[in-house]
Length: 332
Ligand SMILES: Cc1ncc(C[n+]2csc(CCOP(=O)(O)OP(=O)(O)O)c2C)c(N)n1
Ligand SMILES: [Mg+2]
Image 1: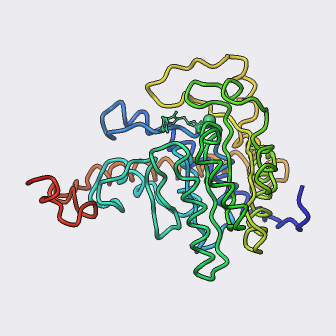
Image 2: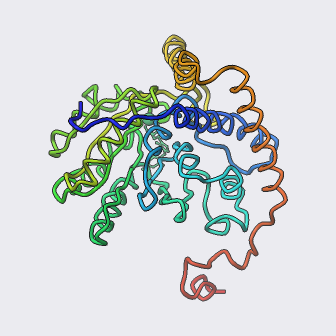
Image 3: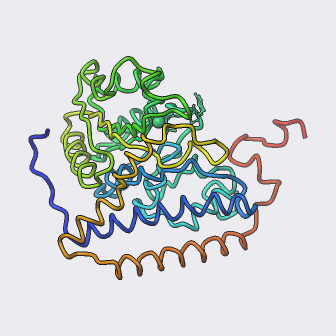
């Protein structure tokens, strides 16, 4: 696929990737319960089943690189060092959150961790990624941008404009499409007349690759190659990671996808796949996985308690950083 030597991952690095995926899985499982119990005011667009994409693509990025997650890429946060407490503070609108209560879980940004907030408009972040990449080059850095978006987003005009401009100006950006086969309840086959989004890259004059989105090592390697290309001034790459979410679009949605399709994808659980590889090589056993799980559950428990004990911001702050003269703007 690529003509650059692969970077080899150590056993410790693979174990850390496993832990990041497991953390994401447990977080995604807990939030709907907390939501139902009224402990957090919003659900989450679950990334259960898709964990290998965000972890594989973000692992190995450097400080100074930027990531723009999609509304579903929870893994980008963990892989960039954001804590569960930080994410819960964002979801709960707490005073401790970066925007002091103005973001949500899927529109959270962390400048200190190189994460730009995604917009609420599906596909709206893709042109932002191109702009961010051009800014990094104008600042004479060799930093890159990794931008996540779904198959549905790839059918919007933003995708076309952003990829075209990025290719023309050789912007240092890696476009990572998380193709989970659905946009809410609309299957990808009903929304596009081609099977592979990667094919579109040729129309913009950039490489496009299909990647096994259930294989974290494959995603890591493909992204590292695309990142090396972008850092080297050769321009953008489109990676289409074929994946599947193991849960409906959002907690209030009913499951309406074919049972046999779900069963087929469940056999390719990215966490089980990496676990099997690590066990095969005697790098991980059930006792170590159990210990990892226990530590994650403890982190989640401590984080939700601490977030619940964190106060909301002063209501008078609501217009801060939005209007120059906040109260005059709304006639107060
Ligand atoms: C422009 C726009 N249209 C519709 C929505 C509502 N919406 C939120 S997520 C979503 C599905 C997006 O599908 P995809 O891009 O495949 O990402 P996925 O949810 O599968 O990760 C839709 C339609 C929106 N946020 N923005
Ligand atoms: Mg999708």
